[in-house]
Length: 189
Image (tube, rainbow, N blue to C red):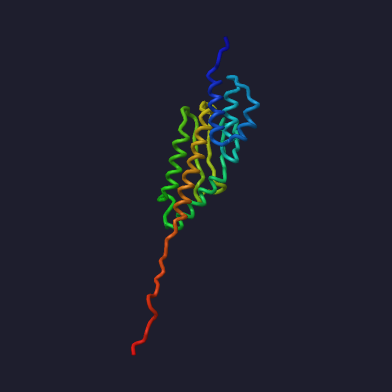
């Protein structure tokens, strides 16, 4: 009798989630090299983190034992541009922009892992220096690597949804109805 490990099913769940989210091409390139063994599970979980957003970078600080994940994507840039346009048109501040607050709540909810020793941040404001991005900081005792990909997929879906709402809101133009002259002006005789 062959013993099946829990990680075997978790890897299949990963594969199905990536496939269902339209990451088919990236998924095929990476998944065909992995064997469904428990020892490969954590490596596979770490590898899938880089598939969600267009540009993912990992910076390791071995002295402090902290990994910094940097996620950038045209979706993030588009969201920030649309928010700025919305704020200018409506004459509101960033703090009063409900779309920005909704996206920040989606990020908070999606980066809620069952482990500890992690933190996150985002650079979505025009006042923030550098490219707009999401940041995830993980320490040496962070054991929820397998949950990060699902959280990132939720965030990406959130960006897509909020962008669609923002575009819809911005496409609504104020309609100006011109006053038509009923009859031309006639001089009294």
